[in-house]
Length: 309
Image (cartoon, rainbow, N blue to C red; front, side, top):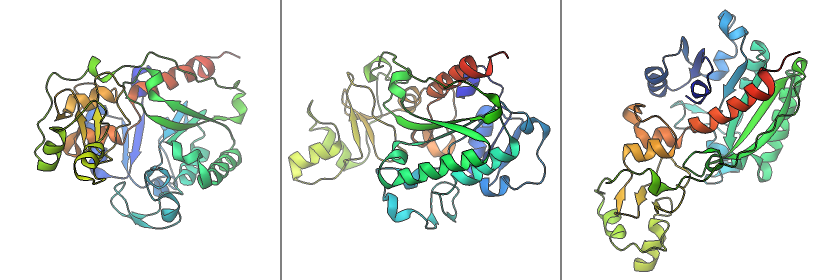
């Protein structure tokens, strides 16, 4: 969606989860679409000609194992059941078949996104391996930590972007720096939210105060229980927290839950985007905000792809 906003022609996609891919196809209608594990897709014997003349190959290897909210190191190198793909697998090594695919397709530019945790602590060793793998595949890599809220997205979402250019392109260093005015929740939320059905959530929100940022703040004050710290209370005068696929996102203004449009607006998706059975929260919590991707894609077009000579 972000590339389309930036004026690119999106040729196709590869997604392991069939339900997610159905949602993608319904909304984006790609010419070429594969429901496949990237490990298998990177080993195909033949690819359509369109995939052999790409300006950009973009991928977001699943970030579950690098999130600072998860168990991180405990899951590295281990197979387990993840939401992504609905099968027992490793996720921390998926950058490497993606880079193998880049080596085979040889696009001019390769972009990969992941969570901020990728560049923190022990995970930085993986970053060095990724840079070496890109180098061996014929690419020079830059790394950017970008905040969606500074790119016009009404959501605080820090993500790491690997941007690699094919060595024969000789592009100058890419500059990515956005300083847009933050968009606060009260500027776009719907007039009325969805009343919570869970008694514990309804009870907690009925006791909210201006200082409360999560349901845990209320539960600690009332019951001395630290439960609900992943359930956010968003105030009109703040930029929305990073959307996640789980937990509750509630509105301080009326003590209700986010609506579908609240999620889509906060993530910069079009209002008519159909999130399918997984719902708007899951879609937005698992996605790169389209507006952020559009800003990055436009800069790559301006600074790199449109250069002559």
